[in-house]
Image 1 (cartoon, one colour):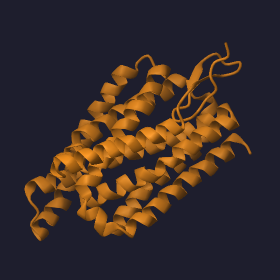
Image 2: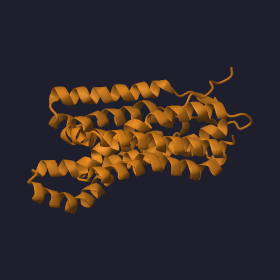
Image 3: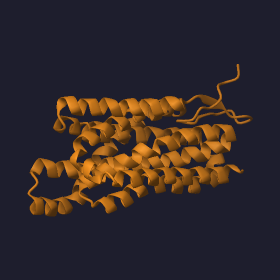
Length: 279
């Protein structure tokens, strides 16, 4: 199978896993609505851990500008939060009037959209990683893509819960979550596959850094806030459970640096087990 075909196949598999997760979670939609703060705290643990132990280390390997780009991504989080608040203002204002929700709850719902956007960007980056990994080596691509497909499941669940909290219906939240977590990966993989061989590793590292900063902001500034509203014990347990899951998924496909044959530059397949240097 050609690198392009393999990339698209795994992009489709990622979308399938996201769809399966959303099909399952819709059967428990009343549970997710009732426990939204706890689940949001769980999501916070996941996205912060993914940023710190998966994206950030790879960004530091590939790009000299990674620390500054992480800060830039963090700043982008403030912009996204502002845009999400504007987008959600009229929608949640209507919900507030109809159901009598308090002001703090309305603000929390508005803040739920920014993390979804950040996760969508991260999922798009996953598709790019598929393309680069399969271009480097089929075995490397298989390892990287298999690991990345695993975390499509919790990403889809996170998006669904947050979009519910934003005020969408169960059906609308499922469709939007599928677009954010599954379709973005497939589309990015299909678009990047023909051009993966010419991708500059430093550019890939820059993208990792920006997305890592964005995820850190949305996780720390918005999702972890839910831990407080869920209660210290329950919220804290949810955060650590999410962090543990993300750490386990990252450990399954711990990154290694691979030296490209006849190319010179090193490229790390984040979330993929690449060959170690030959000494």
